[in-house]
Image (tube, rainbow, N blue to C red; front, side):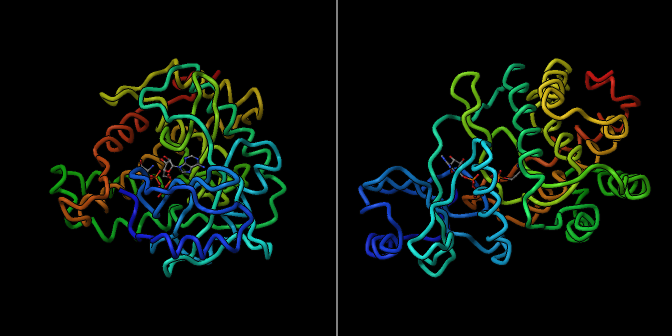
Length: 320
Ligand SMILES: Nc1ncnc2c1ncn2[C@@H]1O[C@H](COP(=O)(O)OP(=O)(O)O)[C@@H](O)[C@H]1O
Ligand SMILES: N[C@@H](CCOP(=O)(O)O)C(=O)O
């Protein structure tokens, strides 16, 4: 689910008086998503997504996320455009939560993306990186290497409940990854969560990137590594080299990777797999069974971690 906070008609009508979108025609909660409460809103002047920001989002980050979407949309990235209130602000308050309206994007996310769609994602990711280069705001990656430790401290003692031996395996990963993590690769604004459920398609044409609520400053190649993990493995967790080659070729058609970025990819992909394994593990152990939030399988990311651990050359990903 992703409606944690309910909104009644009177509250919504009052909220919309601060916007120039006309009156409500209809609205309904959206089940997908996990962080915030989202509603599909049909108003007299169009269709929008209404988001109420919940506790997992730090309110002080909201101007960064919304101004970033505005910046990227103005530079041609196909992403939602936040709607300005009459007073020029992007954030209001609804049902006691900070709230915003963004434009609705047509399309569907792909549960089984094709090789061609992976190429489109690579291309769009590189466009996002270039378009974000002159964005004046900054946000440190709260889920960079140091942040992983905090998550791990909250789950280490129970990790073996999920898979025997997992605690020792993850400890060894931390030691290796923390020691070897690069500190001087090209960096800038990254999406940081560009999974298939955050990318819409109309056929093979990419029609939108959404969910910028993990966006931050970090290595561009780390964002590429996250996409390799999210897009280029099959449901049995096997790696699909054709999808990886297409994703990287699409990316490099817009922003070529340097030799150092390419050489770092196996380690970055391992680190990214560890990051998503840790958030999933934490949720797996802390969200009660039967809660309406969808829990994602941490073992999927253990399998990806193991795959990258054995990669000795970026050529495995289709790079020369
Ligand atoms: N701009 C948009 N256009 C169309 N649908 C959207 C848009 N933004 C969000 N959605 C819908 O809302 C769902 C949840 O959005 P998302 O930003 O991923 O939420 P969360 O941050 O809670 O994970 C998406 O899966 C999609 O169905
Ligand atoms: N993509 C992450 C979870 C974040 O969920 P989202 O609904 O905000 O995209 C994962 O798969 O672990």
